[in-house]
Image (cartoon, rainbow, N blue to C red):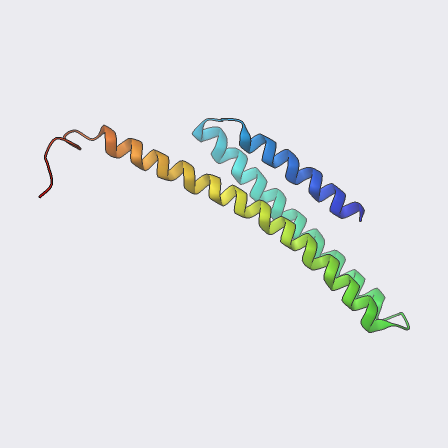
Length: 115
């Protein structure tokens, strides 16, 4: 539960930062930092999953314990994936905007009518 609260707060902070306009260089740096953070969190979740799975095999109700651990693990991974998708969407949007801006600035981009 504590992990989910931490992940939710991190997601909200990432969403608030993405809502603020930042420069292209700053965004690239920020996006890489976020990807590194997500990778580190994913690695931590995998370690926790391994430890939790091992602990489940020490219990009497192994299957129930494993089901609950899997459910928590999948929820945490899904949250990290949502964060990745937000970063990727923002990056794609910025790249498309930059491409359009580049095409509009090209000399003769709109001069000749198309047949």
